[in-house]
Length: 305
Image (cartoon, rainbow, N blue to C red):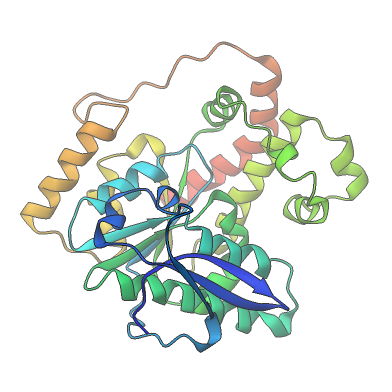
């Protein structure tokens, strides 16, 4: 079988079936979510029976807390022909979402499923080295991911507390609504009871949810991780992230990254970053300082150490 584009995964009686979409090579120059349409021919194959040719581990993993520059980092790597950044692919999300809360005896099974999914992207991206960007809540799947790839280096992108929570407000994003049908999962993330979850307002839940991601990253940071702040981008891609991923850039590759950063970053490379001026919101700022700032302080200490 010739592998085409792995687009989704469907669980049938707890067995994962991967959906392949036949498409041309230009697919990788477009967002993954734009590819699938009603006319695209597909085939569904049991994931455990797929033969993988390329089991090369990814060059690195990108974790993040949302709204903190992860898309820019992925875009910059995608400009270099030798690398391919896969960003929040649906097939990866499905495997990891189904793995959350699994029994101890099932962790290795889900790790193997995840490893197979990643290997599919290695097959279709030919000789390019893979860099995988996760969704912001995949930091909660760290143990499964690390079990599959114990030596792959990773970064966690974050931003300062008040700035972060104002950004969530600007996007009109209510994470609590996202989890209203997954109360058990939300309670696990925050380590609270269902009664406590139900009493939480939007601001409290959003702030504690972001803090929970940072806490999880802090717990695992010594296992090949590196913290990167939004304010360090875009230059941190070639000054910090590439060395951490053991990527040695040629002059040509560095020039490509620098140029991509210039035109896709929200700031000039040669001007000191000034945080955006937000309209004062006492409730948001109080919540950020109470629940999120302690995590940011700990991350700063770790980064200095």
